[in-house]
Length: 140
Image (cartoon, rainbow, N blue to C red; front, side, top):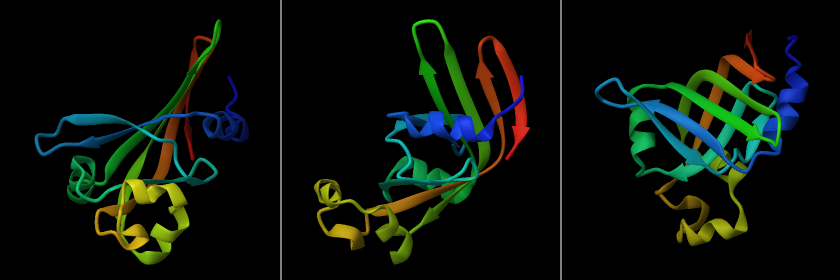
């Protein structure tokens, strides 16, 4: 199977959920379903909005190793892509404004400057794609 990174990008953009993984204080992986990234740059960089007070944010502050996963199950075909890299916690105004949406005030009543609002920036280094009973690793 030849990896078509542009095709994978298109598949990811259609997903309604993303799975993100972090490492806890005991060295175990923790996975959580999230809303899809609000902004991305190819397969290299993905931006998620979340609560600063979340367990995941605390884990990424201690250990930036991360994984994100997207998948689709069709009637016959199933595909999945796992990306490994690092996750940064961003709290600067520019990053927060980049992802802010009007409806976010429901979750962050103080608006874009709410101290419980932050951005997770994932930077991929490598990935693994599964489709039609075949898998292939690739570098981003």
